[in-house]
Amino acid sequence: MSSARPHHTRATQDELERLGTEWLPHPAYSPDLSPCDYHAFRSLQAFCAGKTFDCCDDVKHAVDQWISSLSSSFWMDGIAALPVRWRKDVATDGNYCE
Image 1: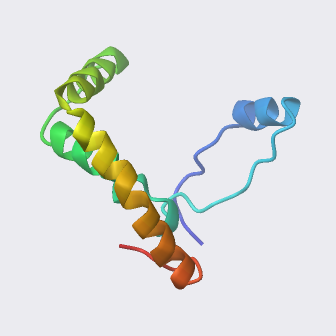
Image 2 (image 1 turned 90 degrees about the horizontal axis):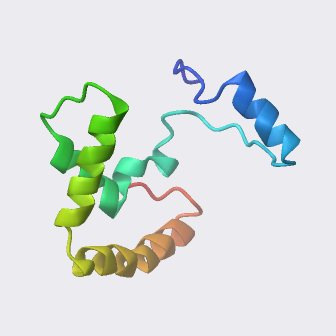
């Protein structure tokens, strides 16, 4: 079992319940849902490397800068790579992790 703190709060759980949304527990650092495995997040991680942010607005500004710096082909390449990842995931019964 992961020792990571849950990525949810009571208020979030209450709101999900109010909306009729089912919350599915998942380990915080499970590799099968790690966003750093995906095209956009690897690029964002590289863009933010070495930067520090003093407030949420600084983070928002950095993300806006990052998005503005990307070409449309960046997004098309990431989307085009998804079927390959999906096939690998299906072929390994959901155990594919890169």
